[in-house]
Amino acid sequence: MPSFWQPFRAQALNLFLKPNCPLCDRTATDTFCKYCYSQLQECQLLDPARYWQGDLPLFAWGKYEGTVKRSMAKLKYDGYRSIGNMYGEWLAASWQKYPPLNTPTKLILVPIPLHAEKLASRGFNQAELIARSFSRAAGAKLDLSLHRTRSTVAQFGLSKSARQENVADAFALVRSALKPGDSVLLIDDIYTTGATVRSAALALRSIDINVCGVAVVSTVVLD
Ligand SMILES: [Zn+2]
Image (tube, rainbow, N blue to C red):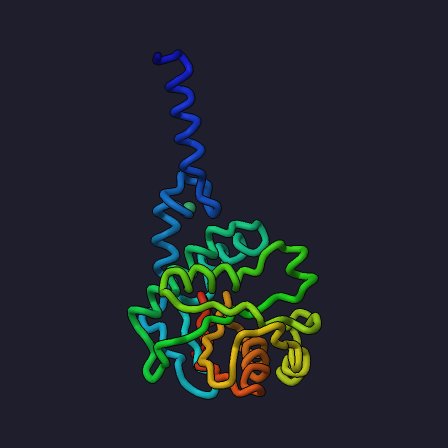
């Protein structure tokens, strides 16, 4: 029997299903509102494989600037995990649309881990969220056995040699199913100096794992 409360309940449900955009407070269509989606799209790299070269090739969905930068902060510091899931899907779509040359088809995705203390305070690793979502979207294997063996201080403000020193030997595999000869793609949220991913690659390569490169949601523009 229709009740007096039904329209109000429907309205409440509607509000529940359509939360506001975490970036601007307009009504969201999905994770964000239409306006912020178009701002995000403007940060997308037209050629995501443009940095796929050198010792540790880099693949990036977009540029770390503007709305992308703000959305990353919402993900990490305000706990909007849906942003990580969304970016994982976008990164997978980019990877499938513009696959870099000479890349093995059977890649294992390995997210850059957080140190245990940081993981405990944040409650989740944003790189793992992105890698999980990438793995679901692309049907790629995921391996979570790379760990940080010690805490590193923030990289900002350190010289290049101090940054490399800071992250050297900071990674190890724990109860890993990875074997020598396996091909791995490292996954991270942001690429800045590259010191962290290079250190992770070094740890994996030291046990003969083939690290093809690193895929990130966003990168500081390198040229
Ligand atoms: Zn918005």
